[in-house]
Length: 329
Image 1 (cartoon, rainbow, N blue to C red):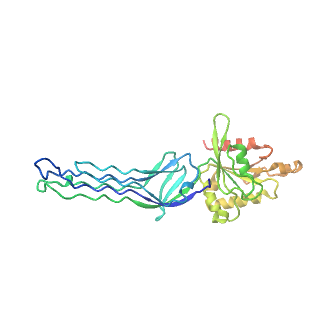
Image 2 (cartoon, helix red, strand yellow):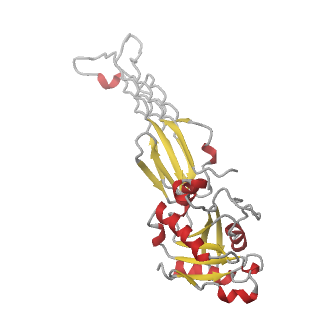
Image 3 (cartoon, rainbow, N blue to C red):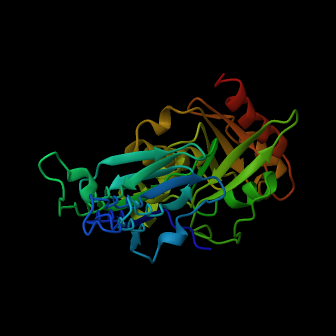
């Protein structure tokens, strides 16, 4: 299934049923009092956060969702049946916007959280409501009201505790597959990862956290180069950042500055989060050169590791947990 994190479509609430014009029919009474029932309420369109979903893939093609109309009222004071609501499941972390005005309608960050995006119309009143002392046989009833129509835009921001940030081919997907059960596509060439992936990392003592691997960033990512602006939003909700830099490449400090600059220009709040540096692919660095690797970049701790040999993996995961469970308590 492809990863889709932004869609637009129209939603239409159901029309309310019409009220009924009817009169009692009794023996020897050709035209009794009014008994026209009310029309039913139109169904509404509801968006509901579903933790089993991680993409908006199901909404990529269909552009209209209509709730059921309410049934018309009937004689003998029989009210029309309400139209059925449509409940559209979306991933937890979905932002709901009015596509016309740009207004944020809801941020669905809790499982089961919901919002009515198109309310069904009210049913019309039957003629029984219009009887008065001077108007005993009203031939009047109301039409049902139309339901709301809205053009909505859904934008997904993944919910994760730790965000893995790095250049293309820095080893983010390999690390995620090593520390969790996630199985992202992995190959030794840039831009293997074309969509974010989530993995649950289990620790001792029944603790766990969710890590997100976002596609590699390049210079200009904050302005949309390489779709970077779409990828960067998926780390806006993370609590801790891990900058992954290939240990065997020259000048890791320069690579870090590029990544830092992209995050800062996209959203200055990102660089205020706790962060660490993971020096990946340490197995490609000769033993005699490892002592020259940086221990800190800026104020961040550098942890060398190899997803291939497993060296340093435990220390890296424990440091992530430390930042999550100790520095955020």
